[in-house]
Length: 246
Ligand code: CAA
Ligand code: NAI
Image (cartoon, rainbow, N blue to C red; front, side, top):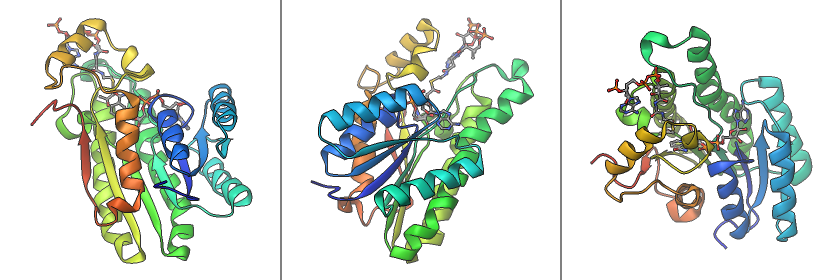
């Protein structure tokens, strides 16, 4: 039980990688908050975890809205009494070539993937500082590390997440808080299912392991960074991408 009695907020926890992480964390003894915009999937995943005997709660949140994020934090404290782990996993794409990208789509992706991470972390961190313990895990992407055709907005947001991760590692290390990021490669979720099939095949061909990642592959990396096994891992970007670039 690597997360026994730890309370973890996982944003974007209702679907895809976040949902896999919620299950993995619960299996290791954590009490899990599924923090997501998607109320139907959130309620469904909360019930599924409870049926397995785990302690889980869905709380609806829009990570772009500070009041909503503050309410997520106060509801978590009310329900579970404390917070130990924050996984900033919620994210969106709005892909287009640079010449065709709408300004609103540029801004919206930055709002969710970057400002959302800022809001959630700033709202949670005072509780972590108070207890002198915490784990913050941010979600970057291969697109943020290497760039990707059609992803000006997304790549910018995910590169910026790396900058925030390293800054927070420098600010919060002395407070007993580990801050790290995971950089997933192309992973089999709804986000990748939206891509043109031809480009998915091209991507797979460029991956040394010759397959997409599974949500569990990324969930296992979150789990490692959330556990005390990673207590001296700090300010790092853990690439979990099947060897897409080396
Ligand atoms: N890598 C390499 N080439 C790409 C590419 C990519 N990711 N995306 C598009 N291209 C190429 C196309 O093959 C095409 O080449 P040709 O002109 O030689 O045929 C050219 O770019 C233009 O593409 P489209 O004809 O499709 O242009 P469009 O304007 O209709 O659509 C697009 C552009 C919306 C970017 C569309 O191509 C697309 O959705 N591409 C996929 C973008 C992508 O990789 N998104 C990742 C989503 S998953 C994710 O984001 C998770 C993560 O963190 C990795
Ligand atoms: P997904 O689309 O399956 O799940 C994303 C979740 O975020 C959804 O449940 C959605 O409702 C939630 N969400 C979106 N906007 C929100 C908001 N404003 N407030 C609260 N919740 C919101 O996507 P997936 O693939 O599980 O992605 C999870 C994370 O991993 C994202 O940050 C994504 O950018 C990142 N990632 C994904 C990769 C992939 O190939 N699937 C690769 C690299 C990174």
